[in-house]
Image 1 (tube, one colour):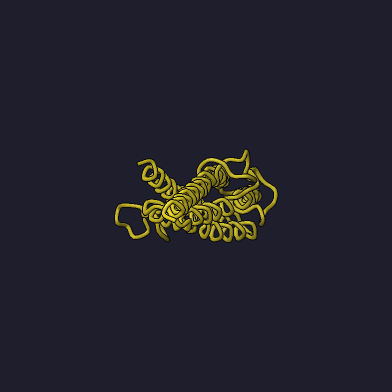
Image 2 (cartoon, one colour):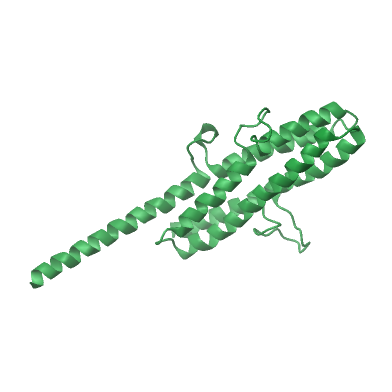
Length: 213
């Protein structure tokens, strides 16, 4: 009887170890989807690198628009390109990768939260996942605001009106990556309305550093 009990206990321990290993693999998979590789993204890159790449395209075209403040058609053209890079479900054609900042940032928030919800997730994962998700969700929300501004540019009837709107949109596009010191305290936090992609990146690096210990 005692031998049977020991065998049973040993099997339970093995099953528990296997379960923990499986959960650890799940956590690392979701972290990898954010940082390294995700099926369906351009070149199967991670969701966060995809968001950075699309934000760069949006920034480039917002700046190109502002170089010709008297060209209404040019302002409208580049406004469309900005929209495409942010959310190609709104504007299907453009110079972006066809994935969009909004979709990528939303995916970052989802997958890092999946990692945090795994039963064996460490305190580091849970803490920094919340920070990453907050910054990424803030980015996704801001893309909607910029798309609305860019749509107003495309509806403008004068270059002066379009340029004013695009100037506002361009500033917001830069905040997608860098974040914004909304409360003027000299630093940019990860939470809304300040967090951007750089803050999400910082906390992903802190998360990985914590997991490496």
